[in-house]
Image (cartoon, rainbow, N blue to C red; front, side):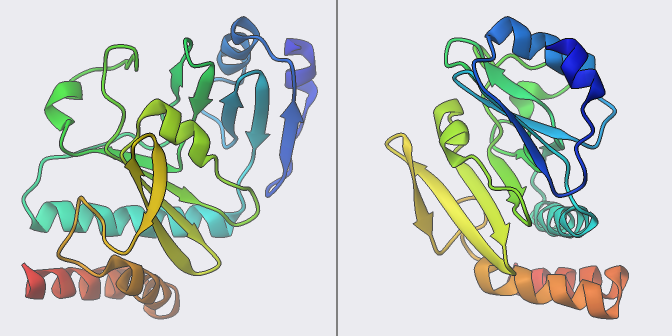
Length: 212
């Protein structure tokens, strides 16, 4: 399996699937792939997906993450962004690497930690997935107990909130209940792309400050 992984080149926007991958093989593949890579993984009960994002995906991910950071900064809420950290739980046989994630309510629980173990540490409070060509895996996030998942696809933001072990779609974010993010984030994202990142982020910050 490791030899196969080393030889595989996943073109941007493509996904390679493997089945019947044991947990020990999954761990070995993660180590073989290393941390400094563009690809991302999803593992669910023996099924492994290795994905490489497109540039459009990365741009959307960065801008949406910037918006979250602005919200948290202006609301004076401590947070810890952990990017595409690998979250996994052997007992559940599940693992995922989000486009980005944030510890907010549980920021103090992971502050200063270099390694996380979801058998004892809480999952991130918010995960972000940008779906341009590859599908997201909400069933993995729900099993790991991530309370809020944002999916951005085809210019639209979907907010999923964990309720009794399953996600339900919500019009508001539990982390930012006073902001109409479903409407505003696509608008400011488009502004970043047409007028420049700095103008778009400044406009978003002004919008947030007017509502604080």
